[in-house]
Amino acid sequence: MSSVQINRIGLTYGQTFLLIGLGAALWFCAAIILSVIAPMGALEGSMRAVTYALVIPGTVPFIFLLRKLAKLRPDQLFTGIGIATTTALITDGIVIAYFPSVYGSTLRHITNCAAIILWGAGVGMFLASIFNRGAEK
Image 1 (spheres, rainbow, N blue to C red):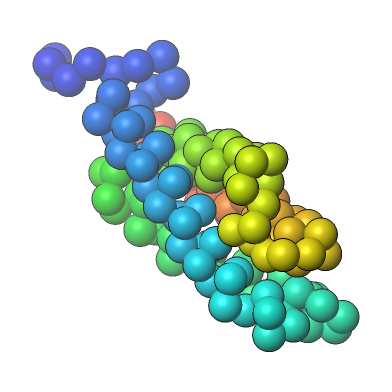
Image 2: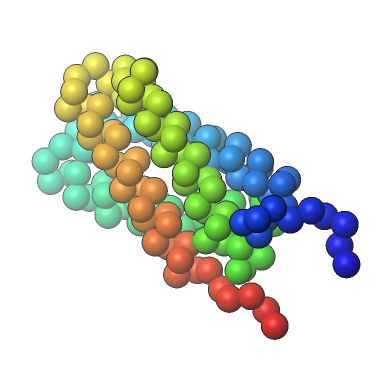
């Protein structure tokens, strides 16, 4: 029997804290990317659909990166991505409420950036549900 303590969601405490940190880091990376592409019009008009579509393949490497860094088993992937995604969403909510200028100076930029963060979170969870594998017997 292993001496590593597992929490009630099936991850070690080390994995959980690492995923919280990685979720915050991923939100930060997304915010930086958005601060560059939003002023270029990537979230306006027809480019919005292109940007949203690009989030799907752009999310895949991050799922596998988190899996590797947190040493998640295939059956832990959905839970692990859920922890990181929840952290990103909480961070996003705090930023929208208290530091909206992170996303821009107009309500349109702020809401467009916040919306694509929400989209990315949903995409990440959806993809994690596809890539998650059942526990080995």
